Image 1: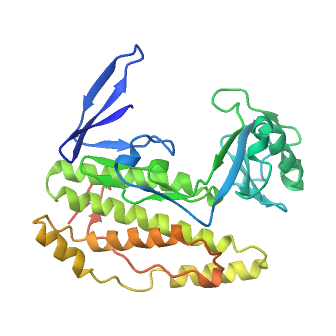
Image 2: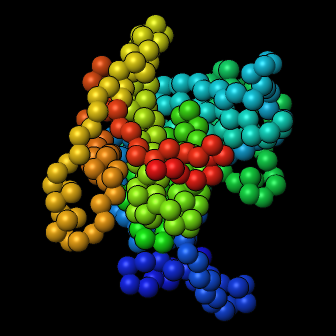
Length: 327
């Protein structure tokens, strides 16, 4: 995809290349940008805000024939910490495994050593006895696109808006928290479900489009907020295992602990502009500001300082077949 097609303030299609050097225009009622963290279109929907706290570097690659955890946990992920950071070990199928090291951005020598990322990753694997054992009989993947060692920097971010009329952002095009807990997979699939449900409902014409798309962003952004908060607590290193368990129980109990009242100034502005009033707008605006505050906070947050999430409820409910919203 090369660009978006606009008609006034609405996206009405995309421009893409046909492989022979020609540009083709495809029109659509809705465009969903699921093109990942390198999306060229997301910046036309909102500003990308990077986390000022989780400014990490990830070096990762793929190996085949690595060991698996004993059943019934053979498909589960494995994490191991070392002095500078931590390593992930994620089974993708019976033989393919994603392995990556996460380090602080301030870690010296990483950028200067980009020509030997494979060696750098291997050094961090060697620092993790359990994962080294699991990879003792593994070989680097060769099949495209898995046969390359990659590096990503400052990968924790969120866009200021997830939609504009005619276009929705899902997956890494919209937001990403961290590789810990595989939150990106969950957020991408959950965002796609919400987008499909909202688009289906808008196309039926039974509920106002803005209401449907605010419901999409409300639920998607709330899920992002949950993972970001959870990450804040889990990255409070040095605690004993019982402390993490106790904090998780408290966080699960206390989050969504109060109701959110509508922000009257947002409603007044829409009335002045003679625009429709999505019933869930105040909640979306609250979460946008909350996400912005979280991302721009650079101070280290200890698990005891993590704020509880408010009880934010959408105004729509899924239909019995889960394919559209009901008012």
